[in-house]
Image (cartoon, rainbow, N blue to C red):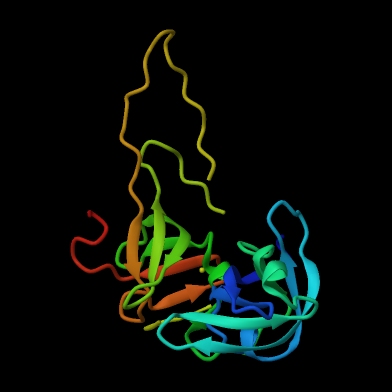
Length: 209
């Protein structure tokens, strides 16, 4: 699935003529409004199948789009597509503005504290709130460090082995908790894809939460 970008999920039929309600996973309305080829992945399938988007409209107050797909002409056909996912090809990306990023590109980037150069963890997800929040999985202090869209300011070494005496138990440690870092310029001034890093200037207490 690395060649695809998910843009939304079909949540329910709309009316009796085959229209579909879609919960968007994209910041680009044209994905649901402009006719053209999309790809549909139904539950239980492995590969998306191409399908034609005939048109769509936004439902104010619902945060949903209503779309019409070619060949889906009644409520029964629409109901069969419930919980299906819509995709576009990864190469089909609209032009981004300054300080705009695609979420899939941020996942996996290493997060570094710009103030002292320490590695904090890796980006595992993005949470939409008043401001978007980077979800960062913290690096455990008990394990070796391994080096390896979205609009900012709105709404992506190997250590040596050590021997242990027989029957010696490894000290227990609690699993690290994920951090939520506001994805705003003041806190996240640097996103460097070439180096695979994000530099942050954490507010007091953020990392220790």
